[in-house]
Length: 452
Ligand SMILES: Cc1ncc(COP(=O)(O)O)c(C=O)c1O
Image 1 (cartoon, rainbow, N blue to C red):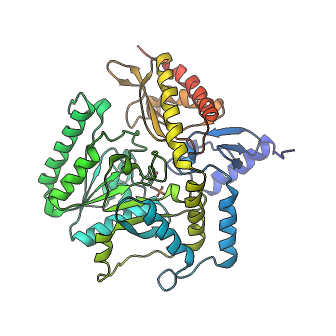
Image 2: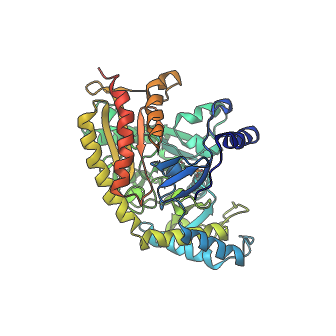
Image 3: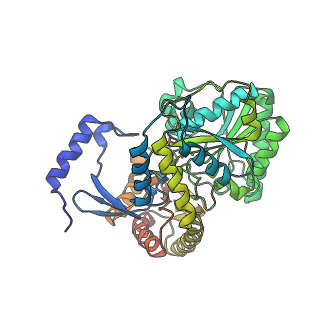
């Protein structure tokens, strides 16, 4: 028999969290969290016994699903032997092992890793490395991108969440527009046109800013929270060609799109490009412990053989976090998780295609692997969005109802503006996808009422 607590007891515990801890990205008075007690596979449970299907892998990081006891055992085993050593003077077996495994799964000649505790820190260090290596200062990134919430990383992202700290952003970041075939800002009618116009725009920005001032161009390996825009075929290749022409480094931010999420080990492999640096986090430990890093090419790493790498972190290469990563990397292979992500991604695409016939508000579904986003519109011809980009709370009225319905049906899905994300753990089955999409369909039915 399961032991659940009463609603009153749960409310008291939630209040304690609200009273003594902050909740990210929110007005503290408006947060309404559930108290989660346990999780297994693709499901998690509140302390009062409510069951949810996790259709967002929490923060698109629980790639191998919840409660995998192989990871628990690996963590405990490392913890029993050694929790921590000074990372500058000592090393551990697990550090070399995970470094080697990352070099093996990343594309091309990306071979040497600088470890961090999360994505934003990894982005910060990638930008520092690019600046040291090139002796140049500017980093070019897309408006439609998110790279984390620390000082430099939030500046690097073009996501409007950086506007809250706009006056104090890190200098020497220059934003540009990426290709967005569904809403091409330059009027391109096809993916190909949208890609070409975006590359011409980027080249103009490089020329205006001055190639001699630009250290790196950073793009997500595959677009994530900015609406899974899906870089058109040839776009990443075109960016790489521009960086080679103008002697600029490339950084692929694979924090969200890495470790199978986009159907390959890394999203950029869908584009057949090897960047100079690749940033990762989330999927490296699939949420079991915090870890991130930036892995750099032989060329970049060789520079630091005779130049100091003047950066470090107390918890750098933390042995226990690395033990989690070591096991998770094996699980991706042993359980054929990335193959499953590819196969289930195709299934999701076929199912959403069928839903689009029933729901006039589905404008488009963009997906790669299991990193997908349904975009809702009021009118398919003029693409009037169900909620605008960077919507205010009143503008979210319809989408909030959609979101509430999905939750009421027992599915946790990420809704942002007029987008509903589809990003379940990569171990998901067809039956579980049906369950998640049935709930999403019930939510979308509410939006259909507003179509004209
Ligand atoms: C592409 C990308 N980069 C960086 C980050 C920041 O990672 P973290 O939250 O671990 O700092 C995220 C987080 O969602 C992300 O999606």
